[in-house]
Length: 125
Image 1: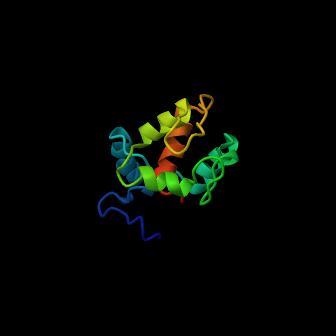
Image 2: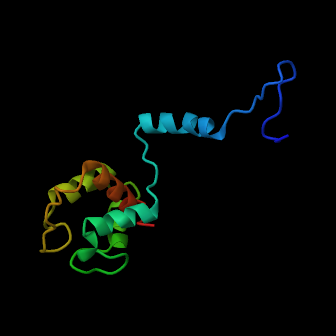
């Protein structure tokens, strides 16, 4: 018999709670509270490719715009929020890093901009 599922003494039914259910008990309050789960690096990197962010930004080197590392250092550790950074991705910006403005990326859905922003704040790992 699987050790995770021990029969109940009286009814013979198993008393183990499925792990997925337990995980949902943790996830639902976090989602409701607006706590962002870290986006997997591969998924965030794929978004950076999909929306051509990599044409101007790289992991550690400045190209046209700042590196992922530099963005994380400037806005991470409580210095900025994912919502602020996502808004800059969508609306563009100028004068924050250099004279070259970042064009608006209005085609990026809000959810993807939020994931990219959180990934950057987490150090683009």
